[in-house]
Image (cartoon, rainbow, N blue to C red):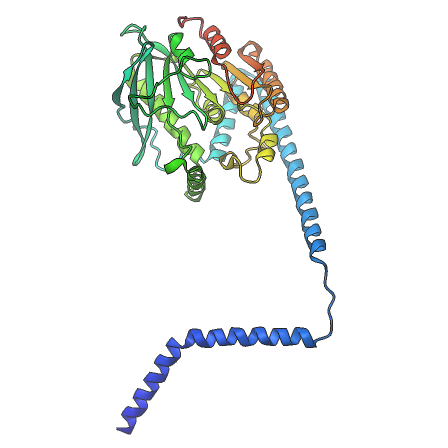
Length: 404
């Protein structure tokens, strides 16, 4: 019996020790803190530095690091400019090879394509009519892109077009506050205004594709995009890569399935955030035969510095400033037609930076003998756009084939 009692006692003590362990650990922490305080009060005085001095040294170190990185970015940018100038001065075959090598570098920086993007499999366009107005007929498209993920948006075709007519197409990428309508009966698809991405192209006989980009979450949650951006990076890709894949797959589907669109006359137009998507997509995708960027093209580093610490997080990809500034991306678009527009009073994209970037891009176009295919247009405005001069430019470049 005595042995049984001892066994029960030992088991009880073990159980108590297990469940009481947090209490023991708490007591140990408290006693250690008390001992430290006693030691501090009884030990000889030690030399300390004011907190302000410590912070000042941190700030100084931070500024030195920032300056070092700025110099490194400037060096890389200059190397890129020289490399591109050398490549463009060589024979055309060599230039084409170098252009593809540069695109491969850009794809690497963007983590493009995203995982499980099968370029050989193009799903069928799902088309659902939405209605019509005095100008056009509208339908919603859904196109498979990645497992469980579709590209979606609104396709508009002018009512004046003949059924068998192959029209030029504009991919019109809106900014954060200009996402296309969902097709509700009480929402007008295009507004009779030059401040509307769809109206002017439709009036001139262009078909228009208004893709859907992720800008906001439920209840206009502005952090939704930020979370997607970070999750994409944690998954080995980028949100920009996924959005570009949606556009690339749309081009694939149009090329294979739409006889009413002329693949030789596909342009992309983007405003603000849409300009960001348009510029990067056109740099990678030669099937975009002309590009219009409004309210975006600028000195990338200056814009990002102004937006710190959190603004435009998805613009901060690998070497986004050191190598892939806007003029360098323009060099990948050349010699295709490229129209840039900016407002002189734009508070987000300062006119000085826009003029600087546009001048550099014009130089890139002149280097390849395509000076007449680049145009920069500034007008008195804030963060807004005017499609009329953009469409004048595009109509000239496409040979005046669209109607007024």
